[in-house]
Length: 288
Image (cartoon, rainbow, N blue to C red; front, top):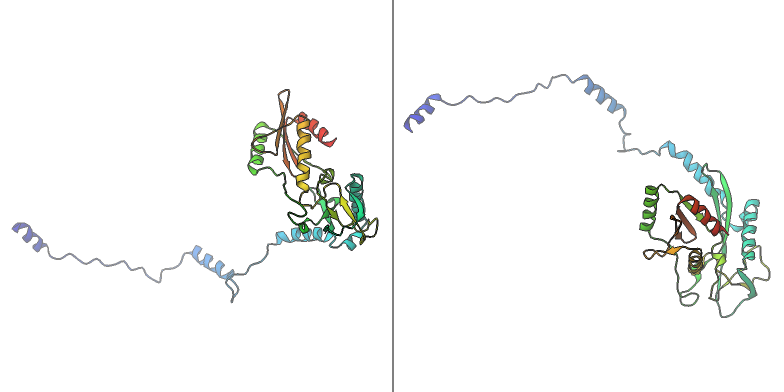
């Protein structure tokens, strides 16, 4: 121990380590100078941290959508001044009369009368051009009171998981998916309740203060309209050979000679997939 201590004492203290000092006069690289100069040219306006501007690429789309919105009439009087809307209203009224949706009766004193209105919609094709002027005469069902005007409501809507499974199955099997819209769907359904509505404007048959329409069939807008439609569609699909799924009451399947066709029901819209030939046969049956 003594020898080691004397050995360290002879070596003496170690030399201090001096820090490396970088000269402040070192020149900046050319790439850094150009970057800082470019940043100074694009600095924000004084007084604000950021200036936001709407991208010009959306201006044309916004103008197009504004044109579509303005094309629909905002009032009933405005629609009467347009031949296309007037013809569409007449077509809707003729469909109602053909299906015998109501009968004209004296205004009841102990029953509420549901008001009505016309709904206007423009259907477009893929290129944005107008395909059809569509008009619906609807009841303002939100005036109906539960327990007085109706007892129970129901809308046949399939589950989203069922839709996802159908799309996945169609993709794996290479099937096409077809969509069908049932026209005047609610006008084909009878109702049990005693419901009165106001006569449609322009097509008044008698004095609207003394006479109203008593519904014999369902009308768009009524609380029970979807419920009245489902039993009729369910019975028809099973009558033409479809089997209802236990997992989803809106899923139907039919197999003919080993070739399947599947139908999904979503209110008045249908999704069909399966063997193409069977789908075409099914479409003809549904259209009959």
